[in-house]
Image (cartoon, rainbow, N blue to C red):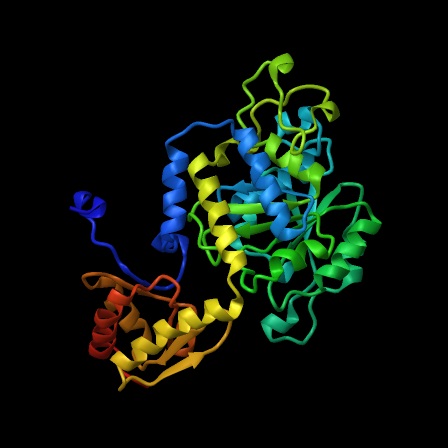
Length: 388
């Protein structure tokens, strides 16, 4: 009996992609084997994160990095680092940021539900710009001068949410921020692939960058990467680790934590609730090595092969292939929303990507589909979907 059957559960068919709501992606045998081995032994967590930092730095070109319990945890820790820096007293006070710079500037069109993690650290978000190009009122978005005029002595950092349409450019924002000695925290959770972004984003000079580990990297769902400037990564990990220690006996790895820069040992920080296990760290590092070693073209070809098989199994459905780093199948349906619900309510449940329902389109993401899922998926689509 499977572990899910023992719990009275039936696994779903996941054509939505590596979304947290549907439990993320499918780990490779190499990743699960590494996690199992890591689980069988104990290790000092600071030493493990220092080793992780070396691996992350090698793949990103950043000064340092840590494995986090997801990209949102990376934003929480990154924001906390921007607020507290290397001051243990400030670390102990967060999320109470009274008396310290605690405003983080963000372009209004880049606001999203995930920036709650930044606010949870104690930051107050200051919005700039009017997103006319999104509302249909015009073509403009925030401009660099608007960010500049929002900078005050209360400003602690600039948050930049990276998408292909984000304006102004990240490079421009970084240059402006550094003129004012402010760090830039980048939410790049879903900006892989291309694999080149692992290096391209740190190369802009951005001070902290958060990637998801459970999406394209194909690591454990509860994993992420925070990489960037060494002192800010040090602050982030200090606010994450278990520090129930005696100062004289505390001997952290100097490649990650320079004890000489601290007046004393911080207490448990605001990131303590975002702790991460040794198994997840090792799993993420294994997945990162595999992700970096595969070309974008090879990865996309693997995914497209799955979609091609699905099309062959349901030749009467008018699928449209949308090429890209992650190719998708689009299916125009007269009953798109009803079909999505019926698929989810079936047995087993089938989850599709609902992101284009307002256009009457069902989207199929191949990244979490197994070959054995395809015949049933094809049959259910043919039985339920009414082509438009």
